[in-house]
Length: 485
Image (tube, rainbow, N blue to C red; front, side, top):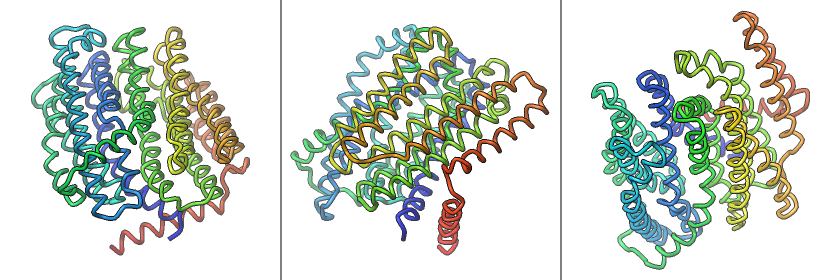
């Protein structure tokens, strides 16, 4: 099986899992934006991003350290290492959650104002975090053992259980934001026995203190690495809530959810790409080609979102309260595209043992993005937050490309990436000119813009017809394999 076909096969399985799990959050969007006010939805969005930010110190990269501990070991050693890492995860995570429970009133005052109801919201968010820690480790076991089907079952089952209970409490029980978050915690807790059952084959009977310490030590750089994925979204919203209030957070969060398709494809590719790069089954030239094709696919999706942003916002969010979200979608889609290309291009550094270098390359755009987001938010509100995020990612991608090329001999197809970015920004600028046009004229013009964008990709030789034919054959081959099974 070719490298590209194998990577595509795994990305389909992982992507399907992420599409269902994260896509279920997308299904909540038109419901919760209608049930909650913009301010209430802002509180819900802020709490879910707070949970993900707290996930970084609570997990501390121990789930990622497992990827290194399993390499080159026989089955017995793998089982011992997995059990030891799980023990370390439970001990460390429990301590972090305990501390968070003690500081809950302070967090409530900082983020929500500190009324009794606000403290309850913080407490159920921390309960949701505790459940996430346990289920995440089971998912990590399946991921690093490359058990794609088990990964699919765990990821989808956990998400559906959490969101199903949350919806029930909100729609049937009439619960507010606290009820929505409590439902996710309760549903996730109910799934833990299933996760334990599906993961028990990977666990051994012994716990080695040396392996516990090793999992902690190896996880530290990954904790810093994960900050851009989990902490940055919260920091952006923290700046926004302090400057403009929860309603603006609600609009920003809704626009971010609309861009979920871009994030999902990025996560799906990354989930397949990391084990692939760790196995070192590819050459430098092949990596360059795969990343170019991936970046082209992702920016095409981002361009499609820009073209249909207004009707999408109207249908999904409803009402005039969220109309400003349409202006934010383009900037957020571009930021997520830059971030995904940047992060996946640096993945080979993990296989080379240069994890701290990759961490530094991730932290730089986060710092730049937060500073620029704060400055621009003062002037433009949620739109400024989005463009600050995007500007930080552009700076990070440029810096990383220089460092990888000079220090590690790795490079992106810089010309193609730059062409994609220029075409996208031109499309975004031109679509803004049609906002005041009649509906018919706007649709016609944007269809022309979309066709022009695709034509530009071919004319600038960003992608070639032969590559599309090969990709179609890969897709057809995978589909035939699924049917035969």
